[in-house]
Length: 369
Ligand SMILES: Cc1cc2nc3c(=O)[nH]c(=O)nc-3n(C[C@H](O)[C@H](O)[C@H](O)COP(=O)(O)OP(=O)(O)OC[C@H]3O[C@@H](n4cnc5c(N)ncnc54)[C@H](O)[C@@H]3O)c2cc1C
Image 1 (cartoon, rainbow, N blue to C red):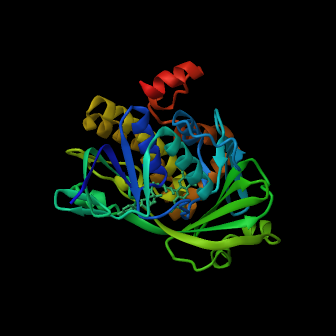
Image 2: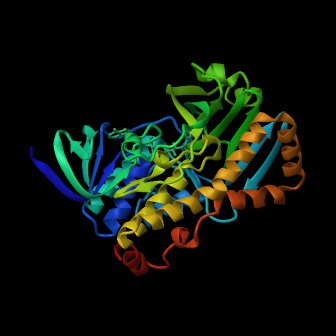
Image 3: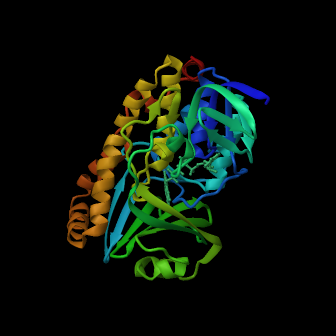
């Protein structure tokens, strides 16, 4: 049997896998990435990148500015005719369609010299990893194969299941964005959030304990949103996905590390999945450069701490109408409180991972150190 040798094998080419592959290349490793799907890979997603996701992408050298995307400056909560808005303390988020984001990450990975194997079959058999039937000999193996990660099970890192499973449904609408914010609509049936993703398009993600077959069915629980979109045509077919909470006691074992949803999930209501995944990728690149996955486990724990608290708060708001109503009243009467909470929600990260290099020269040093 012929074999392949590489420094780093990344299994899974979603946002987390591509980001981890780029981060490892930036540290000088030979990197191979394999995914059984072919690009551009789409997935049901709210398509909002929080400001920290945008700055992490900059550190990875991924340029979104040349592509179709829309900036947003904060978050608005809407429930039972009440609303409250908070703006980001610094920076802006970006709404970008998932295939567009995937295309930008793929191009950057190619440019950085990652060897990309799309439509590839990865088999994890005993101690061996096979790629399209060829044995892979890799110093490091990164599992970026999403929520149902096979690498997580194969490496013995799977512990417990996911909690609070809910159903997500994404639908695009032809409508000019009507505000520079992501709107989150709350109801007893779940949440719907609206992200501007193009000059004439918004993405609506519905989250609910119940599976919905269509956006029209899901929309019934959100009369204010239904009114807003009454003249907007749906674009393309809806797409569904599961969202849940998962925490692992450890995200690395031997020469295997997990990143993105393979390494644990946050409920989609947090809107932080991709920010966390990109920051994990940067932390993992740093740990590989030190040859120390223990360092990555410590950074991963830090990265998940505040988002996990925010997830509990937001899920409690969803489940308890009295709490939701009290929070909305507080946020609309005291916008400062909402802004402080948003600041905590979007900036809980270690400074070393989010700081932007001051100049192109410094960026090059940081990138290829
Ligand atoms: C409804 C919904 C709305 C969301 N909204 C937002 C949002 O607005 N903002 C945000 O930041 N996050 C959001 N998220 C979360 C975000 O989508 C995830 O954090 C992100 O997709 C995680 O990326 P990933 O690369 O870890 O996993 P994935 O995107 O699932 O990628 C995993 C990849 O692994 C591949 N793969 C799987 N198994 C194998 C195998 N055995 N061999 C080879 N390849 C394999 C798959 O083909 C896939 O390409 C949302 C999630 C949902 C469900």
